[in-house]
Length: 196
Image (tube, rainbow, N blue to C red; front, side, top):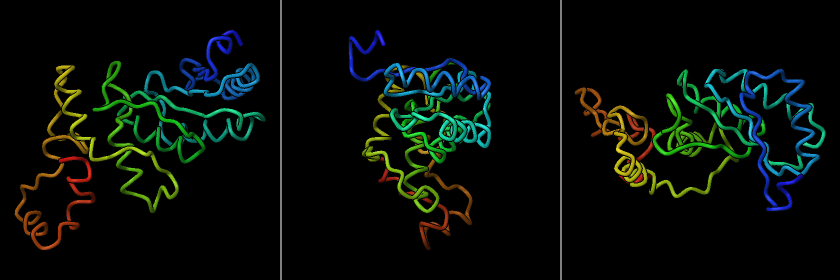
C-alpha cells in the first residue's frame, strides 16, 4: 500500500516461492493483490523447481486466488538444475504472462532463464505455444548477446543454444549433406532470424 503512494505499478515477489507451501503462497498472493500489487512475481529463487511442479504451482494460484486476474503473474527462474527456461515456459502455459529473464542467461550462481531461448522457443514452436508472443525483434538477439558478453566479460559457451558459435554449425558429413539438400533437415530456425 505504501509503494502505491510512489508509483502505480507495484511488483511483489515472495522469495523462494517454489518451495513455499502452496496454500500460504496463495494467501500471500491474494493479500498483496488486495493491497494494490499490479504484478506478482513467483520466483524459483534457488533453481529447485522442475517444470511439471512449477507449472502446477502457477495453475494452483490461478485456481485458488480469487483476485488473481487483477494482477500480472510473473516468474523469475534460476538455472541451478538447468531447468530455468523449461520452468518459465511451463509457467507461461499455466497462466504467467511475464517472464523475468536475462540475455545469455547470466545471473546468480548458474544464472537465470535465458531470454534468447525462451523467445525463440515460443516463436519456433508456435504449434505448441499458439497465441504466445513477446514483441521482441529477434534479429537483435545475437547482437545483444555479443554486446552483453563484451560488456560483462562473460564469454558465451560455444554450444549455447541460439547464440553460441556452434548453434548453426554443422560438422558431420551427413548433416552437411542434409543442409545442402534441404536446410530444415537440421535447422529448426534460420540464423538470420536471430541476427546472425
